[in-house]
Amino acid sequence: MRLMLAFLVLLGLPAFAATPAAVTSDPPPDKAHPAAMAYVRIPSGGALLNGVLYTASGAGPHPALLLLHGFPGNEQNLDLAQAVRRAGFDVLTLHYRGSWGSPGVFSFAHAIQDSDAAVAFLKANAARYHLNPHRIFVAGHSMGGFMAASVAAHDPAIAGLVMVSAWDIGHDGGQFHNKSFREAQLNDEFRDDVIPLAGTAPDTLMDEAMAHARDWEFAGWAPALGLRPVLLISADDGTGPDSHRLALALGLNNNHAATEVHMATDHPYSDHRIALVSAVVSWLQDRLPRQ
Image (cartoon, rainbow, N blue to C red; front, side):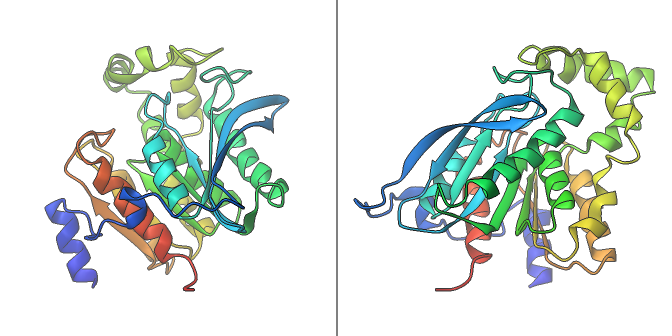
């Protein structure tokens, strides 16, 4: 099985051949407990973050997924949120402090705190939204993948972790002292990405990453992630080596439950959305107890 997975990864093929029904079909309606959507406010650092909770149909309690967006969050991955909800999960999405209308100042440190606060919100409101506080998973894309790993490292009760083209902020932070690297990042990413973010600037964020380079390199979180299952998805966007370093670190800590999948597409998975959603939904369903 390991050889087959490695073969699929090298070919750039998804390791999950079948498309789950939740990706393509609506579940039977449940008039007593219909699927719904709730606008929620998540307290963090003195602010109330804007969030949306997609609640699954059925009486529950449902497993839950915290889905975290990237930097700055142009791609929300809401197709993934809807499919995971159809698979029977409650799904929480949010905007970090200072992003997309959430009050406060954006920073990487604040986003780390906000992601932890989102898990606390799910646990505190488990009865209200009919979710199982002991079956909370966390997933994220790009910077959201970094935030998801941070959440799982901070909370040993997180059931599993999905990182999609995760951005290793600590690893890049260790290179921001290099003038040419910093200038390239400014032109490629930071100058435009700070537009929807409040109270910050490109140099402020790069300096923050540089100051935390050592403690924010997510391969260093492998001991805290323990033996929990991890799904690492990468694309042709340069994120593969970052994810692979984490997979190697997990293996060195006796975690053999990490799955690496590579897809031959761009950073937002523009022509691999069905493949991406299928991989995540399949992986999550496989992590649940058999009925």
